[in-house]
Amino acid sequence: MIKGLLRFIIAIIFILSGFVKAVDLVGFSFKMEEYFAPNVFDMPFLEKFALPLSVFVVILELLLGFMLLIKLKLKFTLSALIALCIFFGFLTFYSAYFNVVTDCGCFGDAIKFTPWQSFIKDIVLLVGLIVVFILYRKEFKKKDAYSYNGKKDSGNKFRYILLGIFSIVMILVGAHGIVHEPLIDFRDYKIGTDLKAEKEKINKNPSEYKTFYSLKNSKTGEALKVNQDDYIKKTEYWAEGSPWKIEEGKNESVLVKEGYKSEIVKFKIEDPTGQDLTQEVINAPKAILVFSYHPQNVSPELLKQIEAKVKAERPNVILGVSTLPNTFKTIKNAMMDGTAIKTIARSNPFVLILQNGKIVDKQPAKDYLK
Image (tube, rainbow, N blue to C red; front, side, top):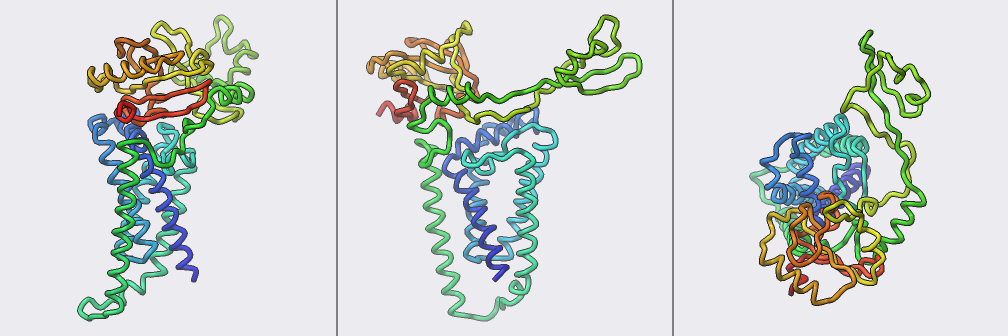
């Protein structure tokens, strides 16, 4: 009873974790790119393989989780899941210890974990899998490979059929998210989101940060961290002739009060000169924004078609938002942080339509042109 319940719980966790990533495989691939970045594992040559690797990892997680649920190839399944947990545990520990990837994406955008929470989750799962392996170890030896058991073989056949159906459904879910938009949108930028209202909530309850300075005594070599308030109050740290010097590049910004949490805090659009256009966009009766996080990879002909269709709709505000100042030729160019664009746009390019700050439609540019 206990071992069956534990097996069921662990299987469901892996299936749910895989499902929320399968829904938004492009989003998970962005997370993989963070791990390949120079400041983490310094493997930029793997960034172009981020999506195929994401598909492989998610399929593996889903299939193994489902196989554990239906008790198919139990010894192999448990062994593979233990290896997978060790791999994920290494990644989350590295992220947490070196503070390089702030969200592992274990449950996509559905549930956010801090790096240490992700690591603890992986350790708990690993312990649970080892316990299940031990509890089921006697069943591993029961099977006689040279005997025929019609009832058992028909049961396994049914399990394989279930696995096949499950695989097809998950492939269709993942393919829809890659080609179009995720079937279920867990992001803060889902259709119906009122960006203006979200901005107001953020402004009323902002997160508060304090800067901690890394100081080093030029006479004694002593090093210490001092928060910004204490640094200002104690003249010994900054008065003329003070031996204490700030170590450049080692200062930290630490969250001291958690405010209203929303990815909308990063929604900031500027023109190429740095003028803020955000309020103009969210206050417009109708605004159409064309996003591109890798404008250099978009064909000029596709951009030309999108610009023509957008202008034909005659909205109050039209902006081409990218990471480069001269991406768009016939509509006004605007700039936005590339990571923030990826949070909004899962396709490159992508069209977002707002009415009085509310998201009323969003779709990949190729779907928009149809």
